[in-house]
Image (cartoon, rainbow, N blue to C red; front, top):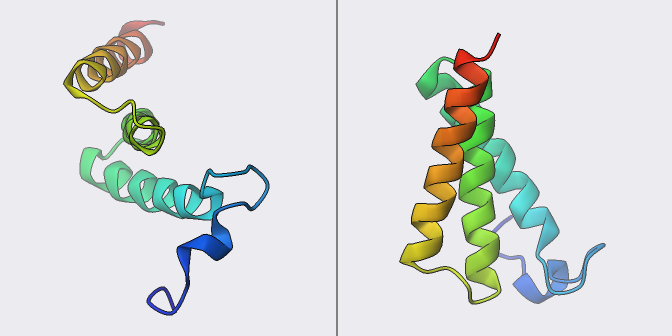
Length: 86
């Protein structure tokens, strides 16, 4: 079904020019996959949100190496805070 779907038809659902159904389904797939890989739901959630954040930046033309390192730093800081904070 994905092959027969035109991206222009889902481009403007709820938020204009955002491809919301694609990002929601990608987030769910990444979340469940990374939760299984890391054997931790919090880490799966944090890193899948980071990947989705980078893809959204790429959609708007702002995805570059600096943003990758900034997002990675935020992800590592959140991971450290949630694992070492009581």
